[in-house]
Image (tube, rainbow, N blue to C red; front, top):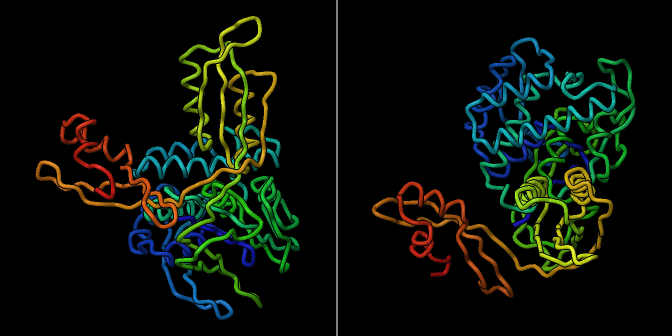
Length: 393
């Protein structure tokens, strides 16, 4: 399954993302409780969800109402408070990544150090509600298991009143956050893309495309914006059954002969954490018969430049080879949960199921689920794997 985020008409904002996720199936009651709870350290908010019609499009509107003064906050203090929230670590880490994107953009625009930056254009309570609500809803639907494609962002136009006076639309921070991502000016003299919405979008998407790729649509959801125009002010989210069976990737390579085994292991994990699709290390013989390794990184195009920056910084290498736009054949993939009984206990196991021409060719259980069962039952991991078996067993 692939998720497509489409902000081509109405732009994007945090509450629009949340509304679209609720329209897609996220639990509104659960999201309301989470969003109102996590903002208690920053200022009280009241969250509500309503069905609205935007120029003929039935959509879900997420309203975040401020019940107390919305205070600005320093980036480092905000991160510290998020660390102390009682939330799943994945939700907290992704939320912190989003705020880091905003902070980096603000620091570049205003010429301040990252640790000293405070958010000028996003208040604390509503921004935290938007970010954590979006991320929580995203993970609640298991969308982190899927490919997420972002289409070009409608930015709006004109001018806007800010803490720094009158500025052009899009705001400077929005342009920084969306650097190297396709954007569209207009179609109205109003701000359509907010820094918070753009940062969430940039963090959640694994790839950016100009057009919707070949796919089979299974569900379409709409999140409504606050403003009314002569066009639908909505964010469209498309859930697909199947994506085309070919893909384009970039292969990034470099030879290394100066790192220890521990340092190579660190680099391997670092590149995966930073967005690499795959990383491999192959022993090689270099000039003057020196032993070394060939580091090969497979990346989606949207992640390529970032991963190259990481490699230069971490390795100190003098050269990196790039083979762009290579084609790879890919099987259709789905993540399907099954219940498995072990020693009288029921466990949910996620299977990664692959199809070719409609036939299952692979249905392996996810390692993380097997590990949880092994730790809870004290059964060796290899035995748990045998008991669980494959999806079609």
